[in-house]
Length: 52
Image 1: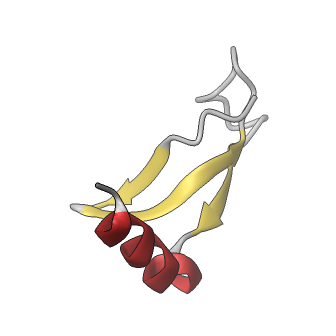
Image 2: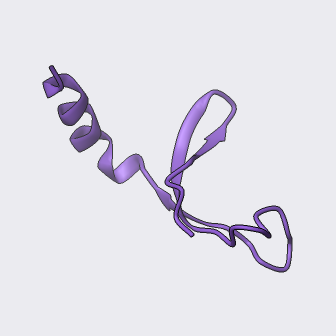
């Protein structure tokens, strides 16, 4: 299950959901997997700037 939901630390988005168990998303036995977004911030900013 890939919701693409954010991982937020404080008020800062630091990741997006890459994989999670749909019905067990808060279980310590089935941890969610996130992709760190900091390597993609320039690309994300460019995409957002070009949205009309």
